[in-house]
Length: 219
Picture 1 (cartoon, rainbow, N blue to C red):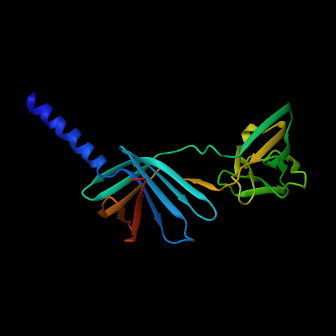
Picture 2 (cartoon, helix red, strand yellow):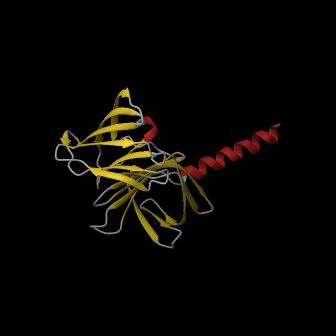
């Protein structure tokens, strides 16, 4: 029993040491005009934020540091800034569907947004662009290939609506598109070799053998 306790204590102590070997905030920049990447380690968790000219990339998850290998396991995160929509469906229709779409960017109507009907592989079957007031309308007769209605505009986050939610009804769709300037990291793992670490910086080498020097902040 005593040996089991010592063994368990050593495992917990080893995990604590592993996590405590790296903590705090580190910033990497490849140059004045190249943007920045910030890694923050807290306990066994981390956040990863990159800021560039066109967008930001954000991710978070858990990390493991063993044998000079740093493994970042990214969690699945919800995008809180996704575009939103509302569907007002009226009476049932026989043999066709009626679609009216009104698209906004913030409070302003969005001219030229694409409203697309596609199949289950998102191959385009029909499309129309919104007018100056942000509206588009059309009628869809029976077509078993149609699986999705998407609302899209360059630089904004796409809306995808299953067509089954619209089939055989009179539908008014009100959509608000949000700018696509924040990219959420999908679930995955990244492994880096820790080349050097001290109180001032963290040197990592990625899978492509590129050396990244992160400077520690907030000491």
